[in-house]
Amino acid sequence: AQTVTQSQPEMSVQEAETVTLSCTYDTSESDYYLFWYKQPPSRQMILVIRQEAYKQQNATENRFSVNFQKAAKSFSLKISDSQLGDAAMYFCAYRRAGAGKSTFGDGTTLTVKP
Amino acid sequence: EPEVTQTPSHQVTQMGQEVILRCVPISNHLYFYWYRQILGQKVEFLVSFYNNEISEKSEIFDDQFSVERPDGSNFTLKIRSTKLEDSAMYFCASSEVGSSANEKLFFGSGTQLSVL
Image 1 (tube, each protein chain N blue to C red):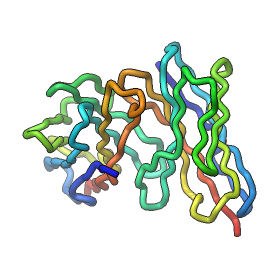
Image 2 (image 1 turned 90 degrees about the vertical axis):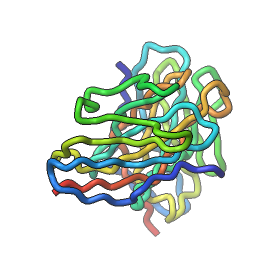
Image 3 (image 1 turned 45 degrees about the vertical axis):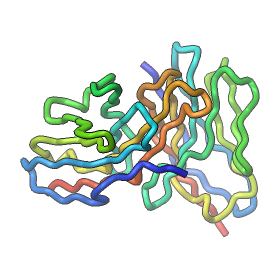
Image 4 (image 1 turned 30 degrees about the horizontal axis):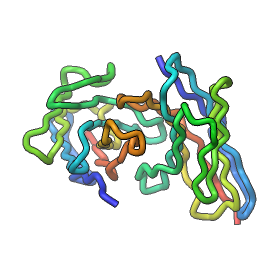
């Protein structure tokens, strides 16, 4: 079974600084997708960034980028120039290709200090 | 951007009562899902639905749960006899399969179910 581990229950960062959230996963599949979701206090699930396992290039979306290490099964999220609006719970998620359930990590609560 | 809509946003019910949570997935999507999140915990998969039948379900999705697509647009989750531990945020999601550019899940804004 696939598992997703986020080892940092809480992280904090100073506004305008950079922070990295860690995620590791376990799977025997070769084709899959990895995602980072942001969940603000409203509890809406907002897709931040996604990575296809077959792509070696790390995905980037504006201030958000990932460090995808397929052999190590590691998928970290880097937030640059942190903003107060980035404060939220962040979930890492795995999903095998061809649809199917997504497996989520326990989440990391990110606090941004002004 | 198209979105998944869920109603109601908050549902309060008495233990033992039946509840139906409603969702309207994105119109050209083919796979539909229900997830739940107990407050402060991770998001958990309940069930996936494709071609008018359940394609996968978790151990949480027992006989008390059922899903239905009664018409061309709605996708519902029914809990027959609610328990206190069913209190959670329930998320509906949909995805468009077959296009690698769109292999992502679109979540609705959730229904908070409170069982008293």
